[in-house]
Length: 321
Image 1: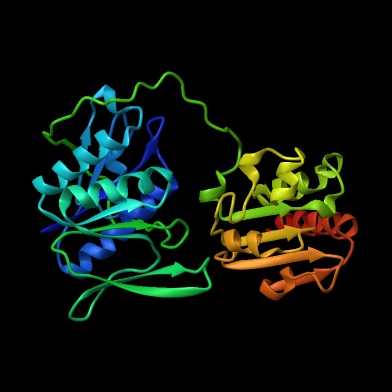
Image 2: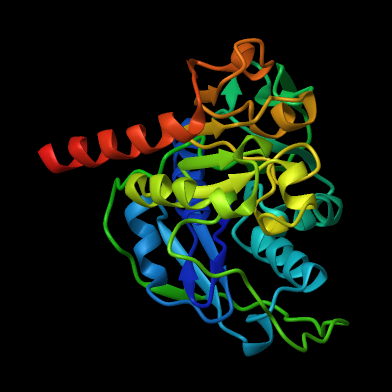
């Protein structure tokens, strides 16, 4: 009996979500009184560092064919690894990769699965976890009765915790099946800040900006804060900002520690993608804007006056610290 966590990597380096998932798997293993094992696929640097987050062992299958993601191949390997280490719980990250793996892994292991969990399991006669439902408006509790459970963990819910030391990376003998997908090229959005799904601080703006030529004040504020920029759907559809910055029900759903919305009215479709943010701050000149009902803090004022003042205030605060 053990807990197996698949730790995602990109270009040989671990994503933040991997460290969160290992921390979650370690805490889950403690609940069961067992050990947490981490699995990495493809070329990975410093895999043993996952031991700091609670992995008792780190396994790596370094076949070059695994450097590019193929959900069918990855799922087969994860399942074989889970069987070899006798895992009763398999943990994935609730990313695009984890979402494409969850169903395949669960089906192969004849396991019950819950996607997007946001709590550690409870064992009170049954295995139970919770997740957000109805676009974050409610929390549902799920009971999993199968012998093996497969879970995916949402980002920014369980912060990474260093609880141990680095461990050696071991090889695990598994069959690497031939993939049916040939990857010709991979293009990823590059930037100085964290990708939106992993960002802890997000500064977002909407049609209140009046045009793309005014976006400089948002970028300045985000840079001072160390935040990732985002936008509403109308802004992306108008070509003011790239579509990968669009957050909302039809864009990227995010869960940052702080979501600062500037000049966004707060339509229900936008709220559905951001209302799991831990703190929401709204800047809008319309005191009747729907977003204020969902906000933890609100500023009624002209964004072209408020945002530069906020930028300077953040600069002064950082200078003092």
